[in-house]
View (cartoon, one colour):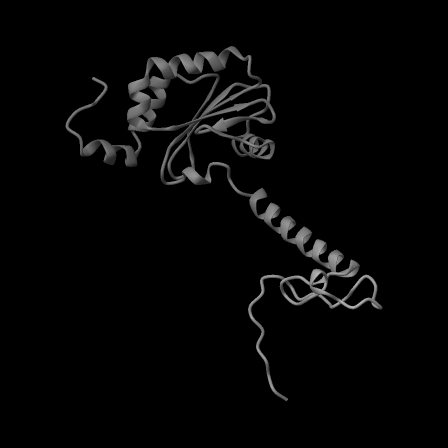
Length: 191
């Protein structure tokens, strides 16, 4: 018996079936992989695609929404109940007033609004990411809370309400990685 090799195909081998077995298969009935897709074959393909999407969704479901920033950025998060919360405007005012200090420390800013809104670093968050962050940091929807996450992904500071950015800057400046960042410079660029 002679062994034949088939070219690699990313598509699973499907049984050769036609809707009408009495009708000969033509090129229109065949996939590019030499298999016909009859009714059962389409169900098989649908099952494979459904299983693959479920695996992909499950893999991303447990992912930390801040993972992309780990070891690269500190993340400053403000949790608020809704978009009209006065704390949100207060936070924005502090960011504008201390622009140099914010720029110098280069944190990614995140706003978690209500149960399903918000963004981190300008990237909108999906509802499941908002829920995951609220669970991860133990913040109820009706509370205003500020959380500072270090480059290692750990919570470095937490305050009820809008934290004073001066206190946040002091906390950042006391961190070992930040001290190394500051060691190589001649002066504070904000003074």
